[in-house]
Length: 399
Image 1 (cartoon, rainbow, N blue to C red):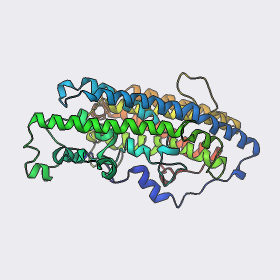
Image 2: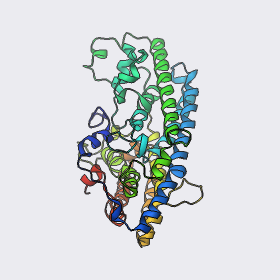
Image 3: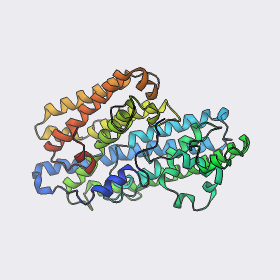
Image 4: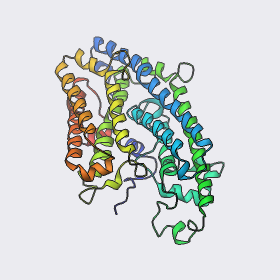
């Protein structure tokens, strides 16, 4: 069996990309756009914080608080996990919409102005390690006062919590040669002890997720760190165009993360999968139904960032308007059609993504093709029209 572990451990894919490319990145200067362009672009920066980032993070924070509450009385048993699992699904779906919002405090401190690495603290996928989570259950390191300060990001956050809440009660994710299996310490734990530890670990992680979510909301709030105001005035950025670059970089999540890692790898389209398909490499191996919901939420978040407002909210100045300002209305039409095609291809999948990879390979390939069309428009024509600087990962991927 091919391991579902991510390619690369440690600080997380976005942080690794930052380390590899931060020096190579150049920031577009404001003299690259006309004064009229800069006025509209600054208006977008002033709007996107209050109308996209803040409400998206606030919605997640509400679900994170509900998840923490749902886990308070959980005993760690699978037969009492319905409420925790439902709360986790709601929180994770809300976070998946925020995955494209990489600018500011959620982003890498090595790449983004105001970056505080909160995204990886909340959800470090694809840098995950369910075996490490199971090892912590055995050695009870999760109970140490400094656990959250000293553990790698793959030992806490929503990804670790997913394994605790949805993982098999009597099995661990470690290979046979791992110490907890080789020395029998896992097998020595009776079901009641293991369930109690699982509940305690999950409750601690849920509390941390809740607190980090609140910190993220505060960082953007006018009564807190007011990063929304900082972004709107391009404070700390090398001009308005640099602020626009960093907001737009979040759209490239669709290219490298959604298209390549979430879809192409499990479907066997990416050569990293050594067999015809790698369904075990889906984003949520312990909770198969979540993988498609996550993709849907990612596409909702992408569209919200592109249009400058959340679904059902009043229209606001978006990147689509900035493209129209440059006379690229035909490109806006193509982008909307590509987003609709991706939504339609995703809706055609049945069951879980892992099941669809095996039972509906052509439909999964159609979804990959739709997201590739959208990402190609983004990396070529959108970047050119808006004079954007590509993030290093986007620049390196030429498909």
